[in-house]
Image 1 (cartoon, rainbow, N blue to C red):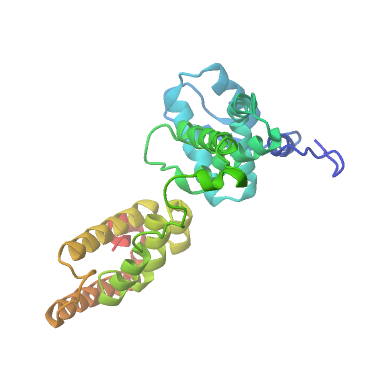
Image 2: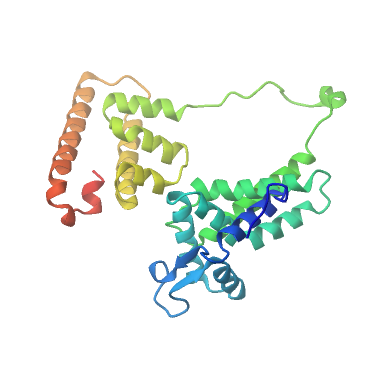
Amino acid sequence: MNVSATDWPTSPLDAADAAFAALTCQPAPLTLDLDSCLPDDGALSGVMALPALRDWLLRHPRAYPVRDGVWRELVRRARLDGPAWVIAAVGMAMPALRRYAGQLCAGYPGDPDDIDGEVLAGFLTALRDRVDLTKDAPYAALCRAAWRAGHQLRLQASEYTTIADVEHLTGPRTPKVPYGHPDVLVCRAVGLGILDAEDEQPYIDVRLGQRAIEPIAAGLGVTVDALRMRLGRIDIRIADALAAGLLTGIASPQATEALAAKAGHRAATRAGRATARPHATHTASPAAAAA
């Protein structure tokens, strides 16, 4: 399928649909190997072009294990394998995205393309970072995010207050100052040796930024399970430090010395495993990489 610059759709959803059609047309349509991502129950198998797979899912709305397996693979590829798979994920969800946009545009006084854009933006944000692939129904979570984003725009359209009415508002109108700075606590945790310096940015990205864990694990060269276990242990150390007042007060010399010793032990253990890994790669476990 060829779409010239002059013919390219102006609607965000139409543009995404055109891009999906271009990716999935002959002679080399984008496909998914179902044997690698689906349970071996005989429902589907082999390599399937994405439009045909989308049609099958639409005809079988209660095939939950198949849908979950397909969407876990689509989300994983969108996060790790480049823009083509982002477009593929959007195209696979297009029937639902168009349905939501159509419902939300009914009676909307603004530009319908704005609703399209918000629905698409909500879907993409969830696709990139928000959906947890360890939980059931990733597709439902993506759809909820798309709907909420479009619905929020509808709500905003009725919440504006004109300048003439601003003096009639009740309550304070000064900006609200955000309370608390978790990133400062994380930085202090690094300074005390509760959190290792090389884990600071991954911890901030996943725990505070709510970024998807898959690309971060790939960038670190560890498995997703290994990074998840590592962050879980950091959660425990930070919780213990907060309970002891180490992050909100002044740490005693004895506590500082003990934390530094534990940090040194972790660093030595990690360095030893990194040295041994080239000689025992085939025996390495996720738990070893998660240290």
